[in-house]
Structure formats: C-alpha cells, structure tokens
Image (cartoon, rainbow, N blue to C red; front, side, top):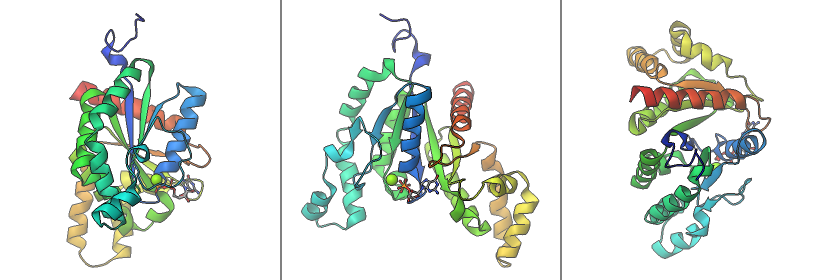
Length: 264
Ligand code: GDP
Ligand code: MG
C-alpha cells in the first residue's frame, strides 16, 4: 500500500472547495478555471455539480446532480416554480448523499482537491437543510473551505458592498469553515477598492456617508461587525475568464485550511 494512502496519512486528505456566491457572480466559470488550473499545475480534482438547473457545464463533473434528478420533471410532478424545483431536486439528491460520499472516499487517497459547484441562486444552498447536510457531511470527512465568489464590477457601490459582505459574514457564521473572499471579474474592475475599504475603516465610512446620509448609526455598527468579520478571512482578486490570481487563490486556501486545523 502506498505511504500516502488515506488511512496511512490522514493529513493527506483532499481539500474540499465549496464555490458559493450570488447568481451570476461566476461560480461555474470559476469552477471551470479551478478545474483547468488543477489539471495543468497540480492534480486533476474530483468535480461535483450540485446545480440541477444548469444547461451547459463548461467542465466534466465526476458527479452531476442532473444525472440523478431532472429538475423540470420535479417541477411538473410537484407543481413547483423554478426555485421550488431546484430546491426539491437538491433535497432528493441529498437523500442519496451517503452514496456520493462512498464514491468520493474510494478516490480520496489519490486526490488533492474536490471542487463543488452550487446552484445559481445562493440561498438554495446556504439557507436549506440540504445545503447544510451536504456541507456538514463533507466537512466532517475532509478539510473544507468556502470560496465565496463576488461579482466585483457589481459591488462597487458602498451599500451593495456592505450587503454582500454581511451576507458573506452570515455564511461564515453558519458554516464556521475556512473562508476565502474571491473577488471575481478583475479583468473588468480591479478589486483594489474593496481591499482599501476592508483595511481602512474610515475610508469605507466616508464612502458610505456619501452614498446615504440616513441610518448612519446603524451603518457604523455594521461597519464594526464587518471589521471583526474581516479578521477571519482571506481576500483574493481573480478573473475566472483570464485565470489571473489563481496561484494567490490556492495559497489562500492552503493557509486558511492550515490555520483552521491548528486553531480548532
Ligand atoms: P454563476 O451563476 O455564479 O455560476 O455564474 P456563471 O459562471 O454562470 O457566470 C455568470 C456570467 O459572468 C457569465 O456571463 C460569465 O461569462 C461571466 N463571468 C464569470 N467570470 C467572469 C470573469 O472573470 N470575468 C468576466 N468578464 N466575466 C465573467
Ligand atoms: Mg452556475
């Protein structure tokens, strides 16, 4: 048996990367980039697609929810709209997640990364029992990190930035996993403004005051919450389209996972 097998060397378990983010932030494109990057500079990853409604996947998935459930049929059968159809499909898939874990565990000794794409609408994964069950099951077995994908060009207004960060904060609070803020689409807008707002509290407050003059005390309190939140995460700027920032991303993942293992 090889010395770095799963049982001989538990610290060599593959790292799970959960791609979470608002609809259109670029999760699927980022997955494609992760897959290509890992194929070319590291080991090919194990790939899971949990989005039942995606029409075309730009990568090959080892496990694809669409092979198990047909979300259009689920909509018809249960008389649901699109969101209900996606959520119910995820619920049906989750009832078989023990089988998914078995598949993964067979491949685990040869893997370094398991990458997971989640449904387009963020809350279907982050605010559902199924999302929590899948996340907990993965995190119980493997080191796991959340890549929170942000649509940088659509977050340049201070109020939108604040809401997106508060949402990210709520996910960190729920999952309690190593967390990487991935500012995507830096080929369109650089994420420098975000880094400035996150490191210089006063600059952000000034920007917010320009944006809205009322509710300032609530805004100030929320800024304090965010200051605390920023201490628990890593920030990288990437472009899923051009591949910029991928080395920094993997460095952040390794650091976050290592720190998590020593602290918790
Ligand atoms: P998802 O809903 O989060 O899975 O988002 P998608 O991966 O489907 O991407 C949504 C849109 O953003 C698509 O039109 C992508 O081509 C575009 N997109 C994703 N990543 C980037 C990027 O790094 N740069 C640019 N310019 N567009 C991107
Ligand atoms: Mg997608």
